[in-house]
Image 1: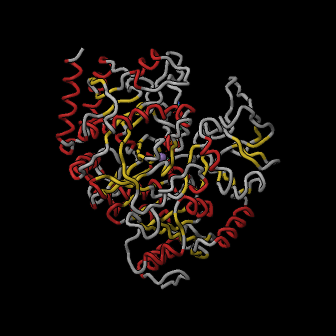
Image 2: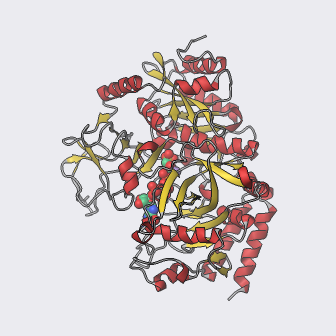
Image 3: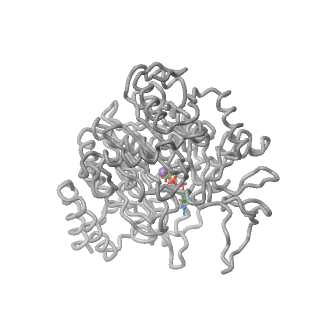
Length: 599
Ligand code: GTP
Ligand code: SPV
Ligand code: MN
């Protein structure tokens, strides 16, 4: 058997040996997490051109990388849940029979690392040794993946020390192979704790700790073990009296999680002493804890954030997080200054630089039809260490997590969904999460701007039958005495010209304020057919150029529009057959009745 400088764990060694024999790398490097090793790997990637170092004065420790042009986002059509029974993957996932999948994937992986090095990355999701933590080993032939995993997760020898002789680790197998789209597969085997990712080099497809493990595999583990893995940010709002309340929020990809997690409240709040702290920006693992409450941790250690639109006004905390030790992917690169740029960073796009494809590019360039050519890919990203974030919560590393007061669901809806509404109770809240719909974004390949159902923002990330997932949500509620209140928000309502009506970003604090007031029974609400809505005068508009009439226009419940929603939900629900919890059918019936009854 092969040996490792880091472990004698037989399961780990057998796993690495099996895939070394299959993929036949020229050598194997165990990632110990040391600075010296990471530096050497960075230099090696720089020497081959895989990575470019940024300006060491302006962006110390920052790196630049371009993915292949055909490999810039998650590929949902090529993502599979390979549970033994098709039924267990459910109607919303692609499914492949595991033996068939292994045969297909092993054939693609056969000899795929010839002439390359295999890196063995031991990593932890959650603080090493904490009750929430889960461990994984990712095999990869990409230094870019090693360096990203080192930011996004806790990597190195300490993970193997903690793992000891246990075989409870998630097996992640990644190879770029030949980056062939037609042979690209992202396969999760929940019953085997195994993930294969072949023929991609893009973030969400290859940083296996993130969506593949921390959501698809972990949601399955949570279902079996009585906890939850959710596509949620976690933030803390500190009141002037010093009390901090924690909120989690599930929005689909590229719908505002990072921005909300790092929100800077408007002047009217900061002047009074309000502060917002970030615990997580993408994934929350949630368990029952002390006081009959739900507690959340962020299993990640960094941010893999959308670059375009990030600027000193929209998200100064995210921008500050990117100023050192960050990897930039598919943004604009200025080879003279060795700095980066993306659409929405500022109003001075650089000239004579290189776009995300490596082509010559200047700000303002237009194509034959006069359309502006973008320099950065709409799904270009930064990978930043969490510790860079100026508003990182002191509870970020708390092994027990933070107690949750409110859970928010939200999507990108030009019409229909109001700015905010509150569910009547947990059951209704699960219904509200299950009926979420949102316009698709550049975070996944395919059409952009198409409204689709995306329950709890988990459509592409639930590792088992979505009907069982809904039931799991209902069951969790039964176990929790002090349940968080559940809300729905929509920052993306547009006017007839297609402009966003609500100012959003920092001003979303005004909505969080109402949400927390509701959690404390400190403010009334209006009952509508869909749930409780604020009275317009209860949303603080101080210091904002926004009228009560404008606010009222997005605090509405148009019955005609919602009757159509209800019909869509009914169709969507049919897909779950017997697995749709009866409680949700009852909620849908109640919604329809409310819509017909009230004026
Ligand atoms: P993933 O990392 O893909 O999961 O995305 P995310 O949910 O973290 O989204 P992010 O915060 O990166 O925002 C995505 C896009 O939405 C960016 O272009 C933001 O500028 C925009 N956005 C975020 N918050 C708001 C808001 O309150 N209003 C408007 N109009 N746009 C917003
Ligand atoms: C998302 O798409 O929700 C992301 C980016 O957070 S990725 O890591 O690509 O999934
Ligand atoms: Mn995400």
